[in-house]
Length: 234
Ligand code: SF4
Image 1: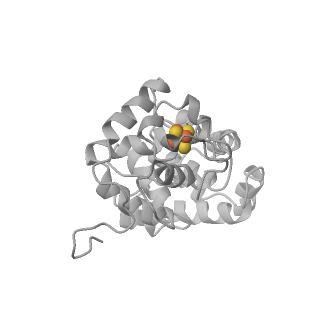
Image 2: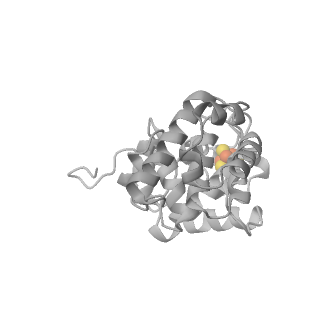
Image 3: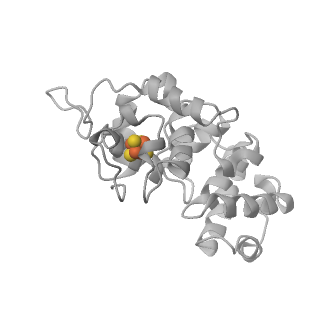
């Protein structure tokens, strides 16, 4: 995506100090287990990470966590979910948004995992992207949280905070991912999602970020303008 001039479209700041910023966030949130809340109880089982992440789409983490745990109690493996009745899955996950569509997608994904991959969730991003309801964010979550592989899952928090920091100017999370892959050193990719999600849920919230309490204010284009953004763009 580099232009002939060498410029990366959507990248506003070359050489952004990601190491310092992510280090300050890690210290602030005293990150031991840096995985996001809805994955905390899911260990690093790729099947659970995949299903939890599909369930989490457009759903609050607290709700996702409880629903995922009760679903895994009844159906602990991809093979078990592949053989479940779609209506039963939908009933068990009815507290979350788009439960019917998600039940259908989860069962279909588990069937593919069983039929094509012998019950193992693929480690290849292109194979992951072929599964129903699996976009780049979900595929990247599987890579980071299940397979400990460098990737940058971009959800609304990562997309929004990258803009506020003054690093990116992009329209979609997919574009932000592409830009961050150029901006963030590969050795730090895995830390971006868990730390910016925590920051977005606590201090840099979508409405009324608390810039005065922010440990990375001095590295933030919005924070150093001297006044907190009333409503964080985009
Ligand atoms: S200074 Fe404000 S806008 Fe910038 S990251 Fe911190 S809370 Fe968010």
